[in-house]
Amino acid sequence: MDEIRINLEDAELVTAVFGAMSRNVGIVEETYGVEVRQRENLIVVKGEGCREAAQALNEIIALIKSGETPDVQKINYIVSLQKEGKSYKEANLSGGIICYTHRGKPIKAKTIGQNAYAKAIRSNDIVFGIGPAGTGKTYIAVAMAASAFKNKEIEKIILTRPAVEAGEKLGFLPGDLQEKVDPYLRPLYDALYDILGRENAMRLKEKEVIEVIPLAYMRGRTFDNAFIILDEAQNTTKEQMKMFLTRLGFGSKVVVTGDITQTDLPKGKKSGLRQAMQILDGVKGIRFCYLKAQDVVRHDLVRRIIEAYERLARDDDDE
Image (tube, rainbow, N blue to C red):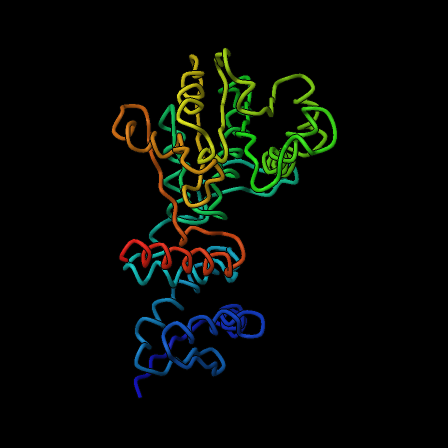
């Protein structure tokens, strides 16, 4: 049986590589069909896939030495990158802090796709972040907006969503119009509160430095020196998307996020996001970033669910 030995400086590092209840090496063993064992300062890898497994383990070791803590998401990401012939270490994701939360926690890209997305936002006036749930499309956009505000690059943050029903009717919800639409805007509020702190975000909202509004409220307005985020853009109509994009004023940035696999528009209504993907690709100053299941940073089951639905969609297209 093939065998590779990795000699480390101390047993503590070996323990960190294995992780709680050997969870880290368990992922490696399952992925490559190998057996991983500890012998004092040695990690012994046995099996036909030992070479690839050892490469993955060396990536995990480099991650730990850089000061990061390997979790299930990172281990799975290292493995998925390796399958594509890419290296987590070479992706240089350990730096590039976008901003800090109100608790002092650094926010940074966790995947190559997220890193490219953040860089695109920095260097383009309009960026489309398109991908499945859990890829950080909205959160990174809000973090970039908060960073731009803190650095005095913009004066206002505008967050908006189309208020489209997903199986329930808006009119039957209790309260006035603002109370009816607030549930649709809750993910934007959550990201704001996490990054800026609830009290600070509410204070900025009262001063109208931050506006969280339904898409319909944007008609007729122009935003200068603002960072404007349109979330859930797959639920815009063609007319709404054109209206939104033409709100762009001087000194402003626009980020549009959406998941084209989860559209809640009425049957027969074409998504404004899909049309924008067709007619705006290649327009100078506009950048499209496509995130995928590999970029999911939620529970690992979310990634598997997305991959299962992607396989179903491919099978349906083949029929």
